[in-house]
Length: 391
Image (cartoon, rainbow, N blue to C red; front, side, top):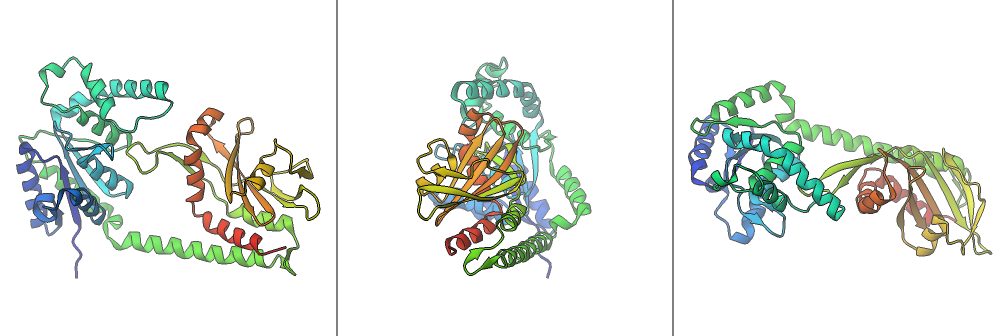
């Protein structure tokens, strides 16, 4: 049995958009698709459940149609965005097909305002050392200084921040005269999307995900067997090969600032692990002994006193924190340490583009989380279990 494509129709609830929404819904339904719209087949819900239900409906949809005019919508103070903006953010995060339609006069004014929004963002970063938590105040300040505001007081300033976010995320705006019905443009997009084909066929993402998971689990099995083969009588019999296997599966990834928010942005990347080092506490002395290194990593010191306050390896061991992150600006290198049993394993990750110590202080949690949430974490967990059970 055919499984109709679900198409979420999103816009602010305002009178001038009601007939447009209704026309799009009707046309899509007649095309045997499954349109989703709040007033048709989502609401009404209690106020405290309405936002969650709308976002869940976006997640359940395949295509996200967004219609923007002169209103920004109901602002959610705790979430730093309007409901319509949150719906878009969910669609973006979950890689839905997003089709943004903007009233022609509003879009024309946005292009004129864009540079002022960027200037306000730069001022905020220079003043506070970070991106703002919401576009609300940024948009208000940019609109306040715009010469056409007095003749356009009906336009809510939040619209400009919303449009800027869509623009920054790389979407193409379709300009629409709202005296006409945009359904013709919607149909043109659908025709093009159907020609592209496979990514709208529901089953394609599932098959891709299953293939990737199957490949990952096979790789993890191979990795586990290789490490276990290097154990004899509860000890590692070849440290260099042991570390080389670990280094090989520690992939690089993106550093996402404010991940999961409307300000999510890639600020850099940590590269494929370039080397590893392994240390073990001496059984009779207050020292950490350097055991071996792999890749480009090395250590001129063969041992470290546990009183050495300059060594991040010692610091990691003494803090008894499972995982820590350190940074060397001169070498542009991240050091991700794993402390387990009497061992400290250090993974070396080069970063790019150039990051200063100050930038790393601002992004440290984002970098740490990026490494923890990567697929390489599956391998690290196995290494932790292994090191925790050997002599």
